[in-house]
Image (cartoon, rainbow, N blue to C red; front, top):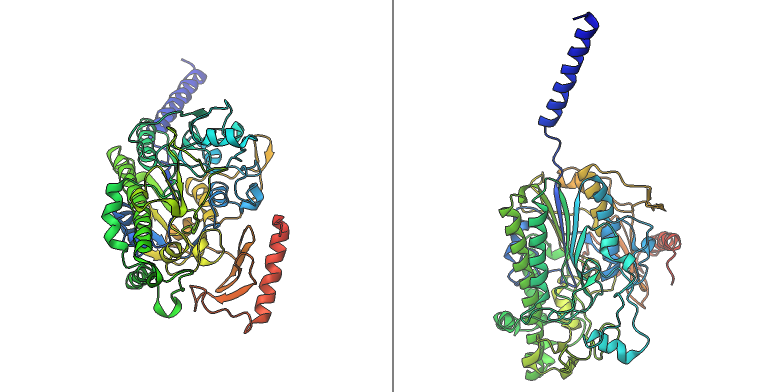
Length: 545
């Protein structure tokens, strides 16, 4: 054999050996990702954030992970979900106001991960497709009541999760539904027209999430699962046996509950007494209520607690599935709430509120509900402002406001790769829009400038990966908030905030985390400087006053 032939043979052998080596050598294993979102949950509802509700599974994640006590959302359902999925201020992707469709100005987490080998799935509440009521109001109510089928989708199908990067989605398209017989339930783009006799939406979502995980783990490819519960958003509904467990817990009322939660938070090291004055309950004093009113409101709070506990039980089922499939150690888990507890109590049906059950039984709203029926399918109410204020302890106000009770969120990260001590607490200024850049940083996936022909706007969030690895990150020079008139700016320890329909207020968050001592009169120059910065940002975002 000639020299050239021998050389060719040698090169062929080396090439073959190289291919074999590359196949044997494992590539870097990318982590699975599970993002869990609660809906209208109180800041201190979880045991690991000072609550008395039994949440052992989330508490276990916190004990072995990292809690954030300076984390923020955008104060309302849709805007928070838009920021979470895109890493942008919600105004840039169509959610300057609640109830609109997510635009194509940003990619979702699923759209970013899917082209790079990730399996993508979503279970639960979407609420990023604009709901369009039927023009005929009577027919629209019949539609909500499951008594009429107009033969149309619940929103523009191109805005559904399966058309925003998710391989599959099971859940609701609209934002408010019955827990026993939900409206707008879909699998992919197909309506789920009937549910079982003993159906409860929280259990259904937990079970479907376990099914998705078992399906995903049959393949070697990593997965991203977004699990968005409706719990504990109104209507407050839960099995009566779950509610009864909590009835004795809330008989002392909201004033006592708020104080007890704050005391636990201080004992746990989440708060310091000197910088966390207890915000006064906005509304009635418990002692002023009649015996009947106390019984009525105790049952409502017990129902809320039962909903949170049921969600935690379902999360335990999901964690068990991750363990059984061997996926837990390689899964990054993030848990948070979309906003603070809600003060809302609806009084009439319409838009997204049905008037009857499927079988024609009349639904009861607000004070028309007998105590015995609170939590049942015919009951359509919420916990109200006093309980909402109390369970956002120690913060003021509630959902939809840019005060702490509206925008502070409990946030837990659990991951084997964490370099922080188990059970530690971070003071890093964090926003829901940080999740997207964190996941891209973690998976080493680039952020696209163009996606499916659309120019993609830059992310506003910042990666938390350095924090998870026990390092420092540059952080925010300023962090802005705006939702339907409520607005705020955080810069360093300063916060400029205007609750809805009220004047600007100024707080030193280092000395006054609960925004109790307004410093506007003492620091007019600082307030003017921050206001100018807010107005410049507001103009860039196109915020309509």
